[in-house]
Length: 454
Image 1 (spheres, rainbow, N blue to C red):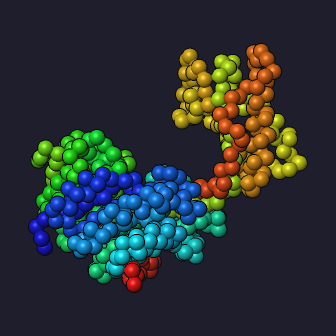
Image 2: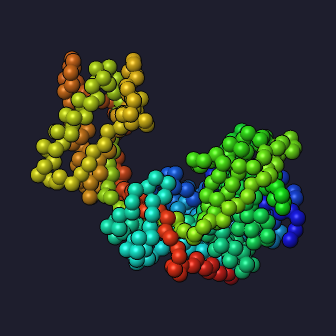
Image 3: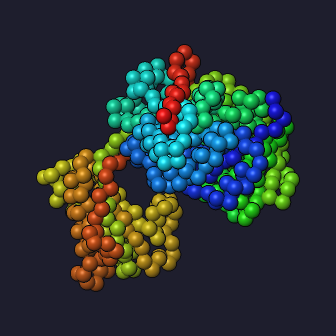
């Protein structure tokens, strides 16, 4: 085993971009591999359910087109995780199309390994019947009745499938939904580096330069891993890592400051140290892995709920702002009366930006109330036509809705757009965000090899 391994995290998310200067500086020295995560549940369930990507094709193509040929020329493997944003088959295949387009335009030929992470609904039904599916991260108990409505269920696997793909000698690995850390920890673990350090370094590397200052997921990070430590340094000279910035990012999306969990087990940071070892570099020591007691697999799936329509308006009248509860109650009553002969299968939601839209009604209203507010009304129904009808009724009712101390019969709302109503399309909700016990289940994610450019 080599005593040292050096790799590049291209950026915090494929398509978020990075500085060409960062790429030049990273390639100035040896690189063992290049990794880039491409997935997140942050934008919500729509993208998994619909099979669409939240990062646009031109963005992904830009990021890959700058690095692909250079990596191939130097025989540096590229690992892409959770392709297309959510990592289901439609997302993976869209990124594969982008890679093939680049290969055709740049006359490239290489071996690519694809790892699909899709899960059959029949497996979900079996696992649910056997009591194998358990809540994860505060999710409710799994409702097996939602399985028929779930679209594109995936498993978020760890390092093992990527290690198997690396062993094929693939130049590019295109992975479906996987843990962010797996993208960057698989190669080091395969090469025999300590798993605790490899996974901690991967946790920091997954977001690119977000651990540096100025922070940003739209730039690169170089990681140098050794048997007893790792060092992180942004290749962009305008950024620098500090002990506090790297330690803070170790806590990214984690509830416990002393550890985080991956499929491989608990990454124990109780004895981790963070030391400035260069003007822009930080070295970390002391992190260890406590192996998992049993094998589990995280599942993700989005269930179809209907169609959305929204309207957005400004509210300036101080009496209207003070009486938005009364406005909402009146609108709900008016819509219920007027839509009764059409349907009763719909829902309305009112968001009062500037008042309590972000925080909800968990605290007392501001005093004084804001000078103006934005009112967003959402309707969800089984069809787009019914959702459009519900929002049209809600908007017209809110426009002239009575409230205490109202002084005129003019409109209550100022609409910034015409048309005032917007079709939101399909609506999904996370119904599967759970752990599955794997004992006795034969489920493997084997790489499929594709010769690109032939």
